Length: 284
Image 1 (tube, rainbow, N blue to C red):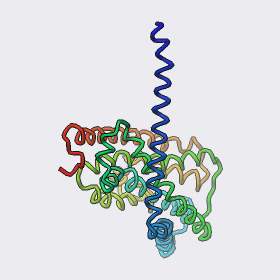
Image 2 (cartoon, rainbow, N blue to C red; image 1 turned 45 degrees about the horizontal axis):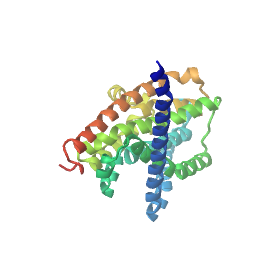
Image 3 (cartoon, rainbow, N blue to C red; image 1 turned 135 degrees about the vertical axis):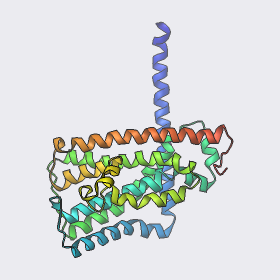
Image 4 (cartoon, helix red, strand yellow; image 1 turned 120 degrees about the vertical axis):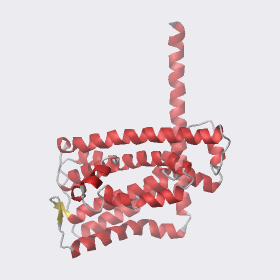
C-alpha cells in the first residue's frame, strides 16, 4: 500500500510530462507545416482563392438552376458551409492524412519512426497546420457569402460552435485513419487524389444527402464529417437546438471512434514495417 501511494504521484507526473511533450510536438509540427506552405508564394495566392472559387462556382450553378433554398435553408448559406467542409476535408486528406508522405518527401521518415515518441501528435499536427492555413480562405468565403445574400439563423451559438468543432474534429479523425493507410498502399498521392472529390458529393458538401440515391446515402453514413455538416447546417441555417442535432452529433462521434481505431491499426502497421521489417523508407 505504501509503495502504491508513493508511486501514484510519480506516475501522474510522468503522464503530465508525456502530455506536455505531445502538445509541444503537435504545435511544432503544425508550425513547421504552416511555414513550409507559407514559403511558397503560389500557395499564398492559391490557398485563400481556391475555396472562394469553389463557392462562387456552386453559387452560380444554383442560381442558373433557380435554386434559392435547400431543405428550407438559404442556398448560399448552405453552399458556404459546404465550402467550409471542403476546406476541412482537404485538410484531412492533404494534412494529417498525408503526414507520413510529407515526412517521406522531406527525407525524415526514418528519424520519425525511430524517435522514442508517439507519432500521433505528428499526424494531428499536420492537420492542425492545414486548418490554420485555411483560416484566411474561410474569412474570405464568409464575406463573399454574406455579400451574395447568405442568411444565417443561429439561435443557439454554443450548439452551433459544437457542430462547427465537430466538422474539424471529424476531419482530424479521418486524416488520422488515412495517414497509415495511404503510406501502406505505396500510392499515397494517387489515393489522396482519388478520395478528394467524391466526398464532395457523398458527404453532402454540394447537394443535400437527402437528394442522394439510397445506395449513395447508405455509403455516406460511414463518414463522420457528413453528420457534422448536417448538424452545422441545422444549427447555423435553421436555428436548431441540441435536441434537434444530438442524433447527427452522436453518429459523428461514433463514426469518428471507428476511424480512430482504423488509424491506430494503420499506425501500428507502419511502425511494424519501419522497425521490424527494416523498410524505414516504406518503398519496398
